[in-house]
Length: 508
Image: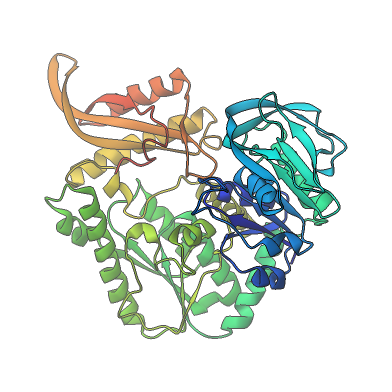
């Protein structure tokens, strides 16, 4: 299978670069810059992209790859720090100065294969304090700005290319085209990576691997675990058993939706456990966010283990790990039952021989496409991201049944109004938060002392950074009026206009 290596030097956009490559139907994977050249050569990559990084290439502790990387004959594209590294490792000069940040007009040589079909002048996103002062022998300058003398360079004979700007971000007007030019014009890829082919190939591989053995899956009802379960069910049918733990902190009617879909529509062997009393009992009186997370994670494992023990030994345990989980964990296998449950390891008393992670090579948008390939309803495929601890980290302070009911209703109304405005597919994530603040209000002839609900909506592509969504006033107005009028115990609505960073997307 043709594939592009994204060699990570610590830049913040490594996942975004990999996703941009995959948008062109070419598989990409991220590996650290320390991977030996001999492994890169043996892997058969069609091309290599060097990412940005936080340091200077001339620093004593700079992140440097082996020089032999540039002698493999594999096409290379350096981005930002990766461009400076390409110059530095091949005899060029990199110095401090000529710094640029933000949108900058870049002039490029359109004769370069990298800039084929791109205007001679366009806006690109810059973020650098160092610059390439002298290009290496054999390279020529193919891009510049008023400040930066080498905004792009190439040695086309050796298939080495470098850009000082970031083509992977949306602020670069023709960035996607540049990456496509590299992948197709320079690396010679054909575009064989599709979710249709992935789904077919994965089902065949799972069927061959598992045969008539038994499989157990922890089903949270989220997109990742749901798609993983459907892949396994398509491959092995009734040899799959799913365990769904309702911790009482789900969105409104979510438990019913999961049961109706997997037990009713797909006829999957589903063990559904209402453990809400157990969870809420352990959470009583607890306000500290991390403590709440640990309790929810601990109780989840206890319930899962108890139900799994009734089933007995199974051959395979399925988890819905996706590619960002693996990258962010820094290890080959992310923690079982999703790292966001803060489990930190495998259940001690579940007997199984091997873990299966059918989605571990996919980003979230690719997982959704697989869900559609498997016939999952769109309202399930495109449901909003939801943390493992559920509403437990969207209720500030102590968790009670009253607060859960208030937040469920408020969140439902907010999501309905976003959907009514036709914005449900264009916003990265949106939800309601029940704060622990009560304030004085007036409802008719009566003074009230009720809760404040915060609404949160962000625009993001990778969830590593996010900007607050500029929702139309009408949407906010409708949501506010409906929540105050329809949800007992709420008399004030606020809208969170903080980006990530400095804030996180979730409140706790």
